[in-house]
Image (tube, rainbow, N blue to C red; front, top):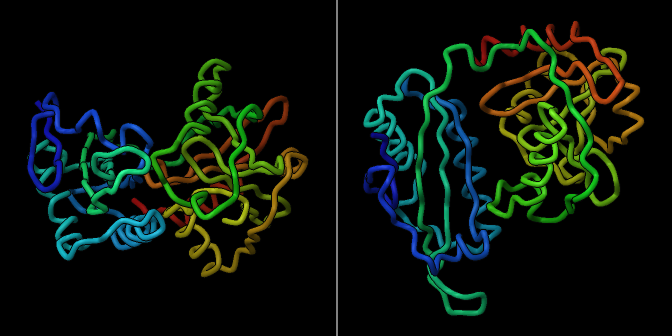
Length: 279
């Protein structure tokens, strides 16, 4: 039996704690973080909690004094111990608004939910077989103050993931409303052209990924040129290599997008630079 944490208290996984009147359930009124731990220690905890608090401020939550990184991190560790997830684990930290309708006076104190799952020991190592991707064009992502947040209104990504599964892709590339590359359903995206790394800027509507941030820092430190800018579909198809990043898988290389095939030699070099800091 696995457990989860709801507002600081542990419950069995089959117990119900969310009201049918929850604004989180009704409207997706909230946001979340996905984190990884190894040996019961979180990777980049400060970055994750800073992003969470920033998102809460954007959404107008009232942040109570007990909602501090140290206290919440301790609750994560307590849950990992309770679930025996002390080797490698994925943690989802969800923040939800309380009960109410769209125009009701509501309590802006956050409710929070912490869950954990065990991961394979080799998670985060560079994939030996390249991924197969496609471009999803039916639903586009807007570029606004919510775009970079991991908020609970996730329908563009849900639709793209469903389409990817239907097409037997490993993931789907999501476009913004200007038909430029945004990100994928679960990752940020990078391309390599002539040993220069490119990635969509946050202004293009992509999630402000923690691993994305770390990769940009490490590339700069190691004198690898990186450019954040607009990225078009022709840019993608003209690239030498494509790789993806998130906090769970670190980086993974892409072998095919449609008929286009990509290599991975420079991605391997990047991975070797990153490995000591992410494994």
